[in-house]
Amino acid sequence: MDWDKLRIFHAVADAGSLTHAGDKLNLSQSAVSRQIRALEESLDSTLFHRHARGLILTEQGELLFDATSAMSKRLDAAAARIRDSEEEVFGVLRVTTTFGFGTLWLAPRLPKLYEQYPDLNIDLMLEERVLDLPMREADVAIRMKEPSQADLVRKRLMTVQMQLYATPEYLEERGSPESPEDISKHRLICQTPSAPQVGASAMMVRHLMTYNPTSLLTVNNYFGVLQGVLHNLGIGVLPDYVTHDFPHLQSILSDIETADVPVYLAYPEELRHSKRVAAFRDFVQDEIITQRKQLKQMGKL
Image 1 (cartoon, rainbow, N blue to C red):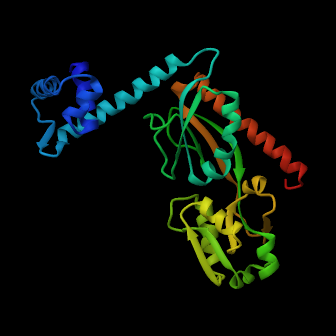
Image 2: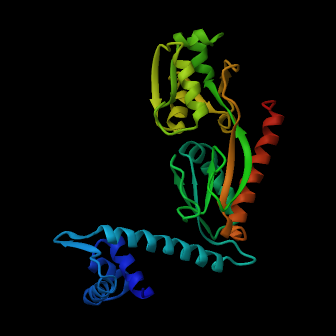
Image 3: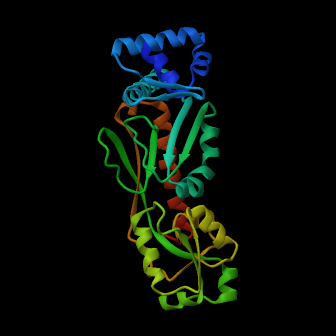
């Protein structure tokens, strides 16, 4: 198949319009249309259903679009490696992690990274879905479990535990639980049990539910749980790394906690020598070391 025709097909499939694809490729609509027709003739297949509102891929078109998408991501990765300077760190780095870790731990620390590398641009993708790194859905991932995909470089960063937290103001007003049964006298704030999350956290929440809390506030991410706790709504189930940036929060019922949840940083093998990836990896590791030292000084480790 002609590479140029595949490039044009990919642009049309992505835009859903000959006109929009032509604008992107700096080609006329008629030129784009001729290339698509020629590709369809060479494959002896119809790739698009044409209607007044635009173009929709046929089944054969979907198969080809999957292939051209994979090709595009591989080419982007190759271009990124080529652009990586031996001495400078610049360009876009796509980082994916969970909503909780991204908002509560990573994002507040990014100013330090930008100060060190002002030409680096972070595209932060926060979602519970595990993105496919070998298929270049992201460059780097930070996840609460060891990645199972092949061809990845992985580094264990730290461990996290889920614990119960409340503000001193809330505990002064409502009293501090002395035993798990006392949960029945309080409002529990937690991540929605059915939401995608670390299994250990979901198990802890299900266990706490057996003590019949007075009322419940469920949120689909830990940032929302934290906001509820900070506004004295109740006792929250939160990851222990929040104690660094919110040291006034009090841990309660310390016997109720999850097992250690490992946190891994991973990236594709093909980016092993990327300066951008190395800069981000070293930054995250340095921040974790600094945090551990500070927590030891505070007597929280």
